[in-house]
Length: 205
Length: 205
DNA sequence: GTCTATATCGGGATAGAC
DNA sequence: GTCTATCCCGATATAGAC
Image (cartoon, rainbow over all chains, first blue to last red; front, side, top):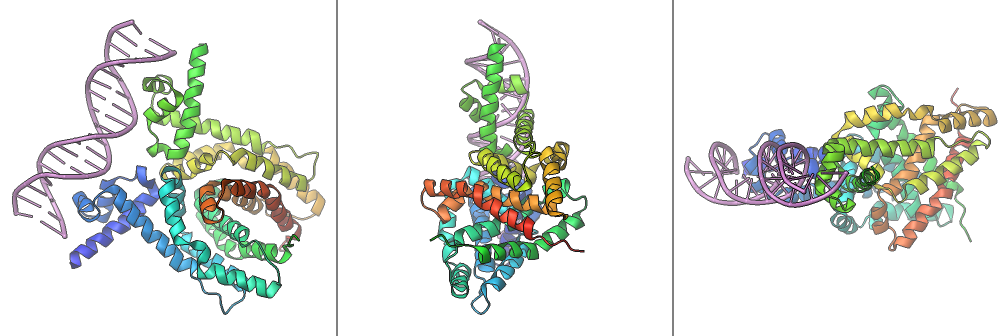
């Protein structure tokens, strides 16, 4: 039992890494087994087939996302504080895990139905953060803002530079340090843009 | 000869579509052949192997990108006009081709070295648009703005919502029309954010 | 639960006729 | 240039011993 749980964990850690870097089609079961330091057959013993292992990984990752980010409680702080916190957490969560959004994008091409169904179930629009955030803006600024558009803008600004990190590093910067600094600075720079957007937003009558 | 050129074109069109949707590993040579309506052997006759075909596709796509977007001449218009034009062109170019950035992101995970070398060669920072854009801002506003950061912001806001289009459609909207409208509106909404960012940017002394 | 050995199959690639 | 037939390898998956 102890051993079993441990092996399972080893497999999951390795699988997350390999699937993320290579995508579903590019991942090799023997590579996962090697990285986990276990025999290839055990993958099938624990997870039956490649697809099932993959689905398990994705489930774990998306749960982590919801519980880490969209459960952010800003009830006692104002919406500006919320934007700042969300951006900080978002960057810290993804900066070393660009493979996760890559993985979503990869599979959005290959398995759209499955992945879309999964996201529907996550019910992101009804998470604590979104509800509180929206209410807080309404109360303080006395206007309706397009919360969908704001979230799309915020996540675009946060995520794309991380997803294409190596590209930015190659095109703009030379060193890894300056790229890391660039991303670190976005914890302040992105909220500035978003807050300005919200404050200046004119409601169309 | 006529026929050869035509077959080659058929293959390239099909290959672009399949590689883009499935990534390199997920793409199947027989699928490309079927989509092109030709015999599978011809793929090898024309392009020798899967990798070579893939590289050819990527070369075509990136050249198209450079000549369509980054060659945009704004010498005779001001920088605001430039932002508007760039955003419009960018969205029109990618809105039906989300597979292209997907493809870059996919392969950034699998073949980073190759793709990074390719982007270096494109030399995006020295394209007409970037040079004119930067000069135009300097002349009109009399300040140095972080052109790299501006481009990253602009492209993030333009591209991510297209890349994850189906996801946005599922989470926010119900119909395809409202999603299309959402993207169409970004031709005006993204420039607003970027222009505001540039105008309000304070140079740190 | 973990291993060795092996079945099975899909897909990239080639030979060779036309 | 285009086709049919086929090779061959690599990767998923299973059988069965321990």
